[in-house]
Image 1: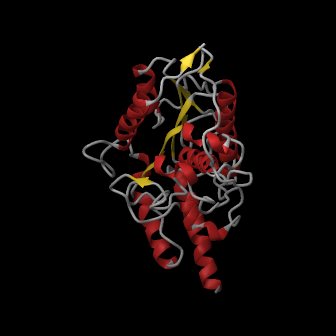
Image 2: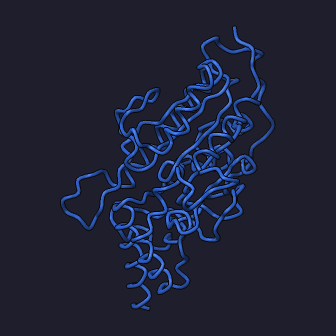
Image 3: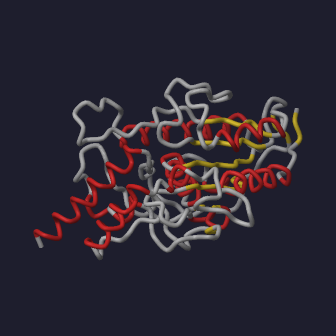
Length: 315
């Protein structure tokens, strides 16, 4: 028993080192009590002229944002993976068609094994990202009741985005009223740390592993500041069919080994040290679908959703 616990601890520490060396990770369980989504609410026939038809909410990954970044023109990290998608959408569509909003949050991951690392804890980072993303949806819906939503994220941002989708789809946490969950057009996740194969539309090639936060959820708060939150309660609920997930085989953030075989898990984690799959979703090296990289695929998917979205009347 003690040997198994020790191996699990090794897995957790190795995963932390991998994240801090260049991989990235997840987000927190949304608060609130689940309710069953119902039929769409009674909505007005028109909304304010300054309301976009679609809000495209983009959540960057670890080290790709900052708490004070400009959500309309983010510059915290010019190499942010999601900028390849959001910048193209801003060029293609007028603001009246879609507002492209990049959630500004601390986006850090402190290495607890390094006393000189003064970054924000992962728990604090993902909590801030979730609250800010949820707050943008809440404020938009209050002002623009006919606006639809496309939600996208990478890595830590993918878990935040997935948690938002889970909250909305299960009528939890007050992000959107349960009866308005149909306003969500789609949710796109790249390297989701809480990924469960089959819980959404998995875009091939799709590996069999689970997200690191699920693989290591039995460890709870073993590593200070890094809580492995496990699977999402209720999955994605009523928006399940609108969620797409991209995960490259061998990316330990979304394709993690299970702890039913601790020794095998340790070996796979150690083997990933020289295989930086997580950082290369903008290339076809580890993941591509019909010749498209992950960012190219996500761009085409989101473009189609925005093109086909309803065009509500304005007053």
